[in-house]
Image (cartoon, rainbow, N blue to C red; front, top):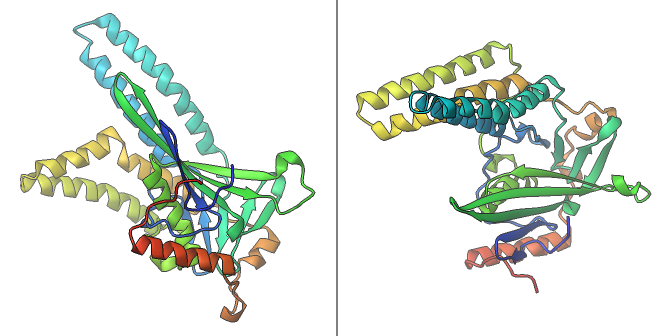
Amino acid sequence: MSRCEAGVRKKGVFSQQDYLAPLPIPTGKTPVDMLNIIWRKNDVFLDVGNFNVGGTVMVIWFMSMFFLSFGFGFRNISPEGSTGMFLGGAVIVGIPTLVFIYNLTRPTPLPIRFNRQRREVCVPREDGEYWVVPWESVTAAASQHTAVSRAGPSTMGLLFISFDNPDPEADEDNKHFYWGFNCGGNEAAMALWECMRSYMEVGPHVLPPGNDFEEGWGSLKQRGVIWGTCFDYAHSFWLHLRAAEIGQAASLIFGVFIFGSPIIYMLQHWKLSPPPDLTYPDIIEWSKPLPPEQWAKRSPELESAIAQREAELAAGGLNREPS
């Protein structure tokens, strides 16, 4: 990932890139964990994962409903078209579903750990290796692209977070590592990045409520959460119908039957409850709390950059264009 000063915005005809770090200055957005990437949070560290159960299930479920609806809908009008719709859906939806099921049976990828007291990040790598990189060296950018078709414009956005190997003698193919999060747009990418930035620079109290993945799938608490969620969906739907709140009732039906919300919730907790932990002996010690007087401090450069950015945000300043 190319490095630009944080706060710089590059615009193209159908694209836009906002550079968020280094240095990690405020974006002006409220932290929002719309992809459920926060797996573990406490006063010492934040574990961020990139195993997106919800997004995958949402796409597979929606496409399944799409092909089934058209297949059954054209069954009497055009039997051949209905058969083609079923066969096409089986191929288009079936292959990603098999891949997703395979990934569900595999070990969950380890999270990246942000230690706010040491101001460092532990990045797990292959073969039991890991990097410990300075927080202020992390690179982040929000990238947004717009495609135009006959159906109209569609916008896709990604949050990229990049880490550099602290070993100066590392091989060329082991010098950089990055994660990409499919957020939908630059505003959403900034809100997702703000979860990590706010945790490191402000504290855990500014983050949205956690997903409570710490309890195991078989615990009484988790089983209560799962069944309670299903009951809440049914109860909320009944209350909205009794109050003639058709819009709210329809939104619940939309979430359940179009995007499979209860299935997302159950699979997510089955796979990530509890989330995988970093068991390297050195990192276990590294993750222990420090006395406040031993906490690492911001660099003078970051202090100055944050003060300048906060002044710009207070004055309603926009992202800077590249010079």
